Amino acid sequence: MTAAPQVLGARKSASCVLVIGIFDGVHIGHRVIIEKAVAQARALGIDAVALTFEPHPAAVLAPGREPDQLTTLGHRARLLESLGVSALVAWPFDLQFAALSPSNFESDILRDYFHAEAIWVGENFTYGFKAAGTPVTLRNSEFLTGVEINTQELYSTGSQIASSTVIRLDIETGDVYRAWQLLQRPHVVEGVVVHGDARGRALGYPTANFAFSYQPAIPADGVYAGWLHADGETWPAAISIGTNPTFNGVDRRVEAYALGRTDLELYDKPAAISFGWRLRETLKFDGIDPLILQMKEDCEKAAELTRSFTPTFYS
Image 1 (cartoon, rainbow, N blue to C red):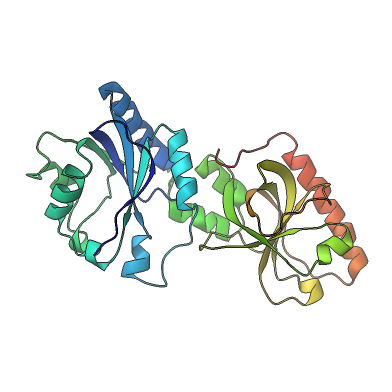
Image 2: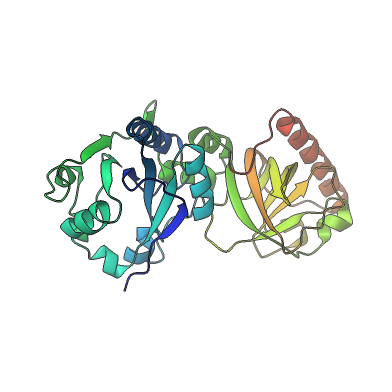
């Protein structure tokens, strides 16, 4: 039997304006439809509620081919809350749910569970067994009589559609600044600080090494300027992603050095990294001295770039 949905946030009204989507990243395109749903909910005096699916449907329908995540579920909920959504409902997506008919989705979930007065979906939204449901079937549903069905065309920036897929490609190639523009915030990865080889500490640049409990969208190997978040604080940071080729490393690592801080004790603590700019590709140096010189230059550049902006974790 499908597990009960996970509710992040709190509903106050019995009915709601419901907005449906994966919302990974809560990017600029998502914000357009969310803001419209929130505005309508406020005009009606009821809650705006978001429905998403967990895990990503591809993890069930095409195991091993699910996309890397732009946001954890908790981060997604906080971003939606900041836009005025009262609650995010994460509906468990499994094979039983995937086999649900469009009519059962309409009656059991949209009508009986959410009591939706209005529903907002993207123009490419599908639902139900074999994705047979569309915005047209929503409008024609016998179970949603009187429910206003709204569709939102896909948001484009110039000639390109703003989508989670496009943002993942930007991150994959290291263009984190372009991803920032589409996300309307720096891209974030969340994890736990773990012990590394302590080479950075020996060189005077102690780094926080990250382990992840989910499959985050990690930028291409290289050095980045951004921010390290931990213990309720945010520090400008130089961030390294790669295998440490100067030391013939094998494991790919994500590590961040809080600029000017050698006193932080973050082991086993939850932490996050916000990515602002790509500084350079990963290089193999002929010894420690040229590596230290480059690290100094990287930190100076990171300090310059981050000086005029400090993101909050869930901005």
